[in-house]
Image (cartoon, rainbow, N blue to C red):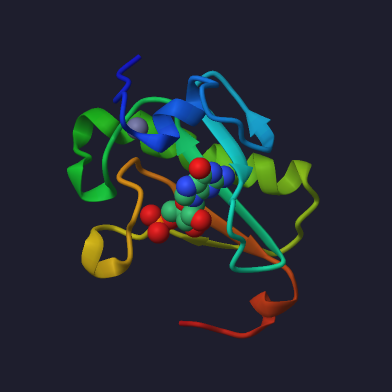
Length: 115
Ligand code: 5GP
Ligand code: ZN
């Protein structure tokens, strides 16, 4: 498994940094965001290090499909009901952790439409 030693999400995946995990499978982990921006705020990450969505190509097709499936399964397991997925791609879009992740947001504020 590709692991970047200075990547906080690789370190979470490796168990070196604790995280409140709510779902995991062979290729993905879903855990609570340390600084929630919504009543429910989870992060879905692939175990394999990929810096950002725009770095992905044909070879990452399965990884991306698996990440979306994991996000949906985690939301179902957590009985979130309706939720929103957000992927920030690049500094200009607000990405601060350069290990691909999807934010899963749910709760009261999700009734406000952002887009
Ligand atoms: P980005 O801004 O890159 O789209 O999202 C990164 C997210 O990771 C932020 O919402 C931030 O709160 C969260 N985060 C950063 N470091 C940690 C950490 O060590 N543990 C957890 N659980 N979340 C983190
Ligand atoms: Zn990483």
